[in-house]
Amino acid sequence: MLTSNRFICQNPLYLTLPDPPPFTTAGLTEVFDSYWQDQVDRQLAAAAVSGTQTLLRACRPSVSRPDPILYLPIGRSARSRLVRWRLGRFTNMREECPCTTGEFISRDHFLTCRALDHTLFDALPPAPPGIHRIDHALNCLPDKASAGPPYFWSALLLLLHAIDCLVHPLAVIPPDPDPGSLWFSAH
Image (cartoon, rainbow, N blue to C red; front, side):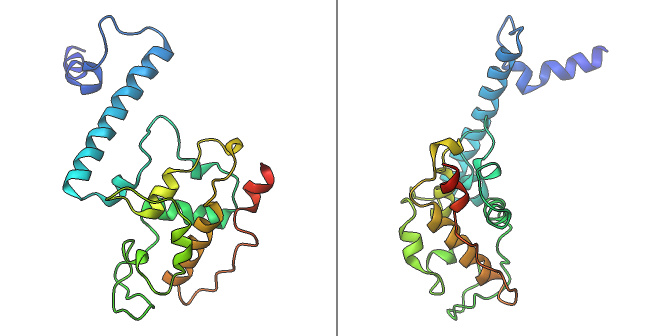
C-alpha cells in the first residue's frame, strides 16, 4: 500500500489537485479538464513551432467535448470520410496521384491537385498558417447540430467525396444523394 501511495503522489495529474482537493464530481471534472486542456495546448504550441505532428495540429483545440463529426446529422459514408480525414487514414502516401503531376498523394498535395475542383476549396473558410484548410473547416463546425450547418458544409462534403474518388481510382464510389441534406433538413 505504501508503494502505491508513492506512485500516486508522483503522478502529474495528482500534483495539479488543489489543497484541499475538490470533493464533488464537478470539481474534479473541472480540474481534470483543465489539466488535459493544458497538456493539449502545450503539445499544440510545440507542434506549431516545430512544424511537425500534422495530425495533432489538425485536432480541435478543446478536449472537453467530443468532435462534432461523430454526432452531426450526416450519412454513414460522409461521416466515414470525415473521420478518415481527421485520423489521417484517407491517403496512401506511396501512390502517385492520378492528376499526372508526378506527385505522391498527400494531404498537402490536395491543396494544389489539378484533379480537384478548387472552387470547393475556395468555399471553405480561410485557414491560419500551418493548418490545413480542410482541418480548419472541420474545426469550424459547430458543437451542436441545432446551430445549423455552416455555409461551407456542402462544399466540404463534396470535396471529401472527390478526394475519396481520387485516392481510390478503381473503386466505384457512388455520390452522396445530396451532400449535407440531412443536416439542412434537420435544421
